[in-house]
Image (cartoon, rainbow over all chains, first blue to last red):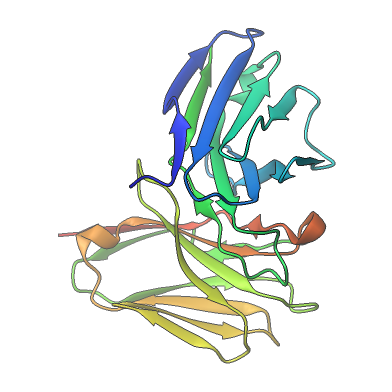
Length: 116
Length: 112
């Protein structure tokens, strides 16, 4: 029944070692989002895909990249993780882009990234 | 920079207590306000999308009200149960291209 799946749930990586987080969806939604949430902070949008169109937030570091090879899958690549990148990473989908701000987003359970 | 503020940051109540918490958002150019519930080790789950001033929505023991003119929404939980323990997030579509800006959430703990 899971609609947005994230793997792995917990990821440990070493400082500077590239890491990839994955997200898949069974909802056939057009939009997929990646959020970063650090402890006691609000989830912060890193980027989103509208179909194949990639939209980066202005303040997302270059260290973070994303790929969406097809409708169902989206990946978050962290090229050289630093200690400050330790966080919960949430993937979400919505049927369409926020037209009037009313489209519900459907979230995965997140991947908690630890950087040693 | 648009901000969404939630208070209190955390709340501890006894089973059976009713409780409420607040989300404040920019009152100009209002489109919608979202409430999500995020239980530990689970996915954030949508509770409500609110669009009209004075709107009140209800889901079981949880209800929410909206005041777009003054820029706040209240979430109420009547007769809290341990299974209500979660972080409650609100979000406002004030980001680039109307993307959601989230508050930090209110973490609710309900003791049996």
